[in-house]
Every structure is written in C-alpha cells, then in structure tokens.
Image (cartoon, rainbow, N blue to C red):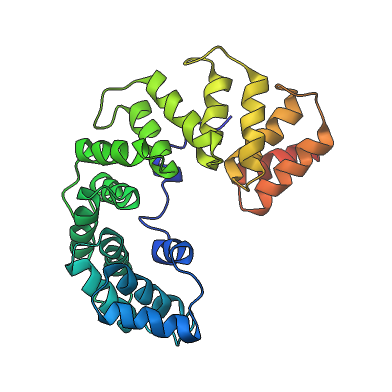
Length: 274
C-alpha cells in the first residue's frame, strides 16, 4: 500500500483561498439599512465593522465587489491591531488580491495576528516557516506555531503537527504524539489525518496492527474523495484486508482513484481485467 504522504504529497497550498473561506462565516448578509449601519460604524472607527465591511466588499455581498475597497477597510482595522483584519490582509498579500503580491508582507501580517492568538494566522505562519516562503525556513518555528494553533483546536494545524512529530521535523520524533494529533484531526473529519491513521494501523509499528481499523479510516477519507484513500480501500477489498473480499467494491474504489489520474489504480484495474 502507499506510504505516508507527509508534507511532500499532501501539503495543502500555502493558503487555499482563505480570505473567502473565513469571511463567509464572519459576516452576516449585508443589504439596505444593515449595509448603511455597518458603513457608519466603520467610518466611526469600529475595527470589527471595518473588517466586516471589507469582507462585504471582498465577497460582493450587498454591494459591488471591490477588492481595493476591501483592502482599504481591512487596512484601517489592521492598523488598529484587529487580528482578523491583519490575517485577511496577510491572505490578500499572499495572493496579490487588491494589493501587490508579497510573501514577506503576508508573513508580517500573519505574525501580528498570530502574536494575538488567532489560530488561523498561527497556522499560516507555521506554513510560511515550514516552506520558507516569505521568511527563512525554520522547522522549529513551524512546529512552534503549529502547536499554538493546534492547541486551539484548529484542525489542519493538528494534522500537520502530527506530521511534524512523525517526521521529527523541528521537534523530537514521537510516534505517540503523532498518533494523538492525527486522531484529533481525524475525529473532526480531516481526510488526510484519517488516511494517515489508516496507514498507521496497517503498518502496525506505532500501534498493534489492525486491518479493520485501517480500512475504517481509509473509508472515512475515501468518502471525502481523497484519492490515496480510495486506492488503499480498493486494495483492502481486493485482498480482504479488514473487510470481506469484494471484487465489485474493489473495482468501484479503484475506478474512483483511476478516474482522478492515479496510475497505481489504473495499473491494478488493468491487471484485474486481464
């Protein structure tokens, strides 16, 4: 079966459209009197209102989408030390949306927000230190900030902290701690953590080998469309690992993976059809 993905294969994009993801849940529908009231509060200097107004402009919610206006309001709130606005500005600088793209400026804003305890910013700062994007690569700092974010329950940070412990990157290698954090993230539905747990139970080095547990976690990740889990689940059904052999189910999951371009799944399906 496939090996641990670790950072090289599963590491998500530095920040995958985080402004849109975060603003969507931080701002109510803005329209009519609500928009007018929000703008009045923003112009009066309220940093939360400024951030929410920036979000409304960013998403085109209740007004025409305008990235320049969004950044202008985020900047006003960020200059007052409002951490969420600082984080959003970091995302904008990273992606070059409404501002000149700058990894260094992104890290600067993430650092400000992270220092105030914003979990999302701590995670993004950890990614910066791990990849060396916008700052000198430093695994120790990466693990430090992953830990801070993970302690607040930020699920991606919990997974990547598990990876850091598994690899001994920036912190001493500790399989038990890796397992702990993988379980934390997996229990909250994080597909990469579920897949890695499946591998741990399949390998039987950190815990007692348990193919039923392995297949259980592959199933959870495969249900979310993780191609590596789809492949391993297909192999489990093909070989009867933790489940009863079932060629139809094996074919189903292998085809899922193959349709996403997984060459291993394509090869196995070809051999099955000979």
